[in-house]
Length: 156
Image (tube, rainbow, N blue to C red; front, side):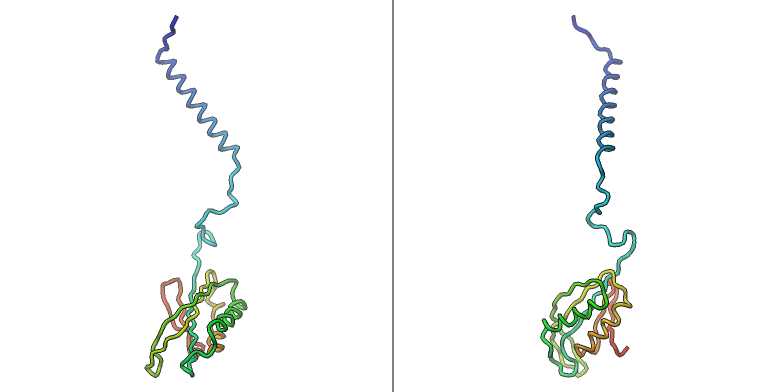
């Protein structure tokens, strides 16, 4: 003898199955530990706050000799030691470029590019002054967040 299911029975059965699925999903969600102590990739250092980035370009051509006196590797180590006195961290890159000096002579030089994330400008002032003095530079270029760049001179 076949039993024929009426539409009420089918609807109640479907609703019970959906209820069971939702209850299981909710139980799994509640019982599964969350990994909230692990920050997702891409979270800024200070959540919700803007992090400043300064980039300083330090030339290696002696301003009086119009040529490089201190080898690039040695200059990098000297500036690294200066950085470690004033900031918590930095990244250094080697670059090559050129510019026209006061005597209208085109100077090609090796440049040390230092990137500071999260540092404050006040920390960088003595760093730049010391870098200018030790490498005999008239000035360095400071870039702030890619928004503007200025020449910083210890003669300011």
